[in-house]
Length: 288
Image (tube, rainbow, N blue to C red; front, side, top):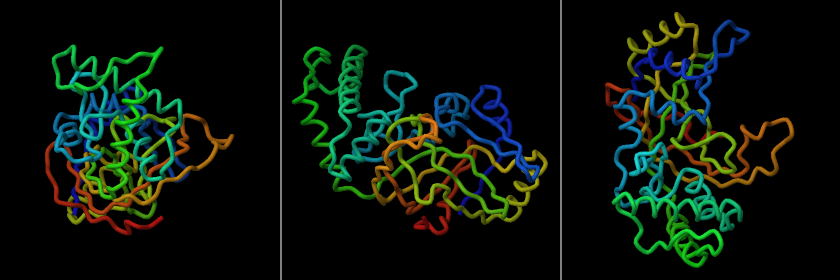
């Protein structure tokens, strides 16, 4: 089960930073929305314990979805043991699960970003891929990248269960049920590829009746549907990889990802900046 502690001062900071929008609903409540492309701002505003919970545990040797902050001390978040940024990690996993080549433009971008990152790591005295050639826009080392990406794709094709960490703001619907949406560090709205869960809103239960009552009372007082920011550790099981087709005209490009890698939530546990909690009970994890 999971207990979720409110972090209203954090929400106020997010609002001031321009990361949060509030929409007045017909029933008189206020719907809070955190933009996916505000991950950098959220990471900088979140208490250290929450960021550590999101990014900790990397470098285990297994191919997981735990984000690791770049050793270069930039705001970049890396996946698959620090090899690739979120967009490229998602594209590689999509390719692994569908057998389809990545989009040529994205493939080239991922190649160049990987090689450039290795050179920066080398110059900074950090661990780097010693076999990686120099990035050369006039004569890209295509054979090296093809070997590297193909090897990773082959590994990913054989894996269906991924440990993962992400952040979220619990939300309460009009029926009083709480849900969480997985927000991965490094994800930006409008990327052509994305990770998501089925269902997108993960139902959760709170077993502490006293805490839940306080949470509901505080939500009512603040006239919101949300709780405080939490970091979650989970096990995500591959469900499907979907090409949703061209973006419908009525949806803006910043809110649409054509290629999705979808997961079911096998288990999940969350914490705030202060407390560590046991695994949450995920209700109807296979619901669509």
